[in-house]
Length: 315
Image (cartoon, rainbow, N blue to C red; front, side, top):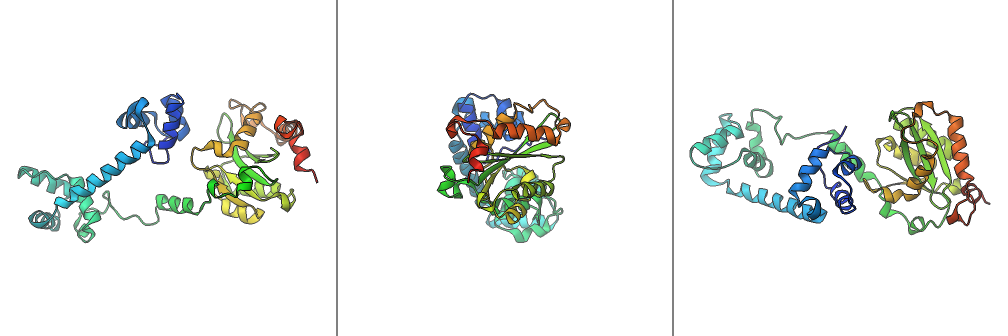
């Protein structure tokens, strides 16, 4: 299901894809947002030819500053009037309407903002605590923010990983088929392109971790150093994966698929055997193992026409 809110993480991706000539539908699919919401957002901030993430950031900041300036008018007699109306159990919408009859323009949203920013002690007089500025405890949004804060990002990785200077630095992702339920989990060594892949019968992060640990334990510890993952929910059990394998886990930034270039390229090769239109329910472990074996034994130009398997297992 796509979402309507276009967040700050989406702006750079929108900028790059617009400059590359992609359509709104392609961009909307990439960032997982509603196409009509994307269209309105782009039109508001410069249109297809003038959209720039830096300008969006600047204008958003100016809006926030203007909003803060607007609440400064609430003082003196006006503040006393608003407080009296709140004590009488009038809503900010009603207070705004009463003021309008007196030729005073003050939006209800400005009153709500004032209560949040400057007078939280007055919020107790609101008739409903379900308004815009209800205090949320332990919501999914906060939990997600805390989870994101714990993740190590790709720019924290040692430089040896960036230059593919050793064996044991993996990248991880999943491939979906036609039904989007059964997935193929792919783990690729950056230096050699050696591929580990297995079927995931359902979207369950704990199951994914269990199967990944099983496969990684077949590899010598000295060849298990780091793994850089996609931000999908299927990798939300990453802390247990890190503990069980002894590998340091990093995450690419949202929509920055090029930060897992080895993984993306290998996924493209695997698509030769299992295209997007294929029903992954029909894939057997034997069929997947055959495809993985073929790719691992395929000579690569960048490896001096040696195979990933040869280089990865070379002593």
